[in-house]
Amino acid sequence: MGGAKGLRFDPPSHFPEGERLRAEVRAFLAEHLPRRALTEGIGSWGGHDREFSRKMGARGWIGMTWPKRYGGHERSALERYVVLEEMLAAGAPVSGHWIADRQSGPLILRVGTEAQKRHYLPRIAAGELSFCIGMSEPDSGSDLASARTRAAAVAGGYRVNGTKLWTSNAHRADCMILLARTGEAGEQRHGGLTQFLVDLKATPGISIRPVHNLAGEHHFNEVVFQDALLPAASVLGAVGDGWDQVTGELAFERSGPERFLSSFALLVELTRALGREPSERARIALGRIVAHIVTLRRLSRSVAGMLQTGANPAQQAALVKDLGTALEQEIPEIARQLLDEEPDRAAARDFARVLAHTMMNAPSFTLRGGTREILRGMIARGLGLR
Image (cartoon, rainbow, N blue to C red):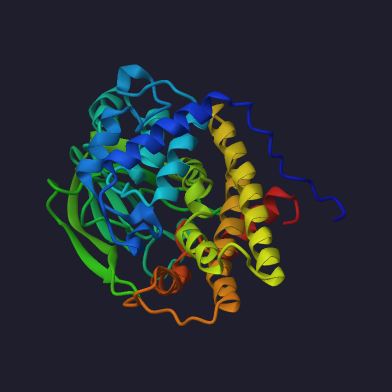
């Protein structure tokens, strides 16, 4: 490896009280989880139910780590982690608050003004305010530094023109954190970027167009800004600091359990279908998958601990995301090798339905949150290899 250096993952703190919280969450899910088709639990953070989000807010499970003065509950990142993985494993419909709780709220808490914190955070914590992410653009892929959406300074604020693409749940969201160019990029290409808080419901000049995926589902969108006027108070953080802010935000997006649990429902159905006495080949395959999940969970919980201390573990989060989504895509392939059963979304057997749904959605797993090529470049820089 020559002069390469390693990426540090500190061990998560001992956390015995987590199991008590886990039991509480499972009891809540048994009572409140709506009866839904099995396939809706695949990638459950896309399932949308505002009433379920409000119930979670009432239990104090949104904004868990935030200060109480902003509607939070001052609990630990590991307590929040327990809630997240239980919700994901159960296929709970959490997208009504997912983005806001995971990254928009923490970013506002870190760089927002006092007025912004008091306006947005309590409503997010109550499960009443949803956000989407305004980063990716057409022809840019995961290269956020090439953003062309421009926010030009005008009297009293900024005039925005440009397009954001692959914006999950923009058609349902109340607000967006927008990354736009306010100045010149400079030699490093990262300069001149600023983030803005955008009210999607009340701002003229914004159109949201659906983008359907291969499974015929609509959660992606194209968001077009045409002379949309944003007030000066909508600037999030400092003008020109958008790149540093957005890389910190991506650490929240890339490191959570959703990055290795999107195929978990298929693993459960595969285990059931194999029965109590699977073949030696099946036992080896299942053991390998479980070992990978345990390792990824350990790494992901370590990143949660780093985020709680105020660190910016961007490279560690990229590593978790890259390894996690690779495993998520591998699980349906392993399932097809172990069971001679065709994927069929209309099948009577749960395994065939869940397999079909997972296979249709798996190609997106390595795209959302940053493509593999971009992530591996970040990891290489973190290791001192480039």
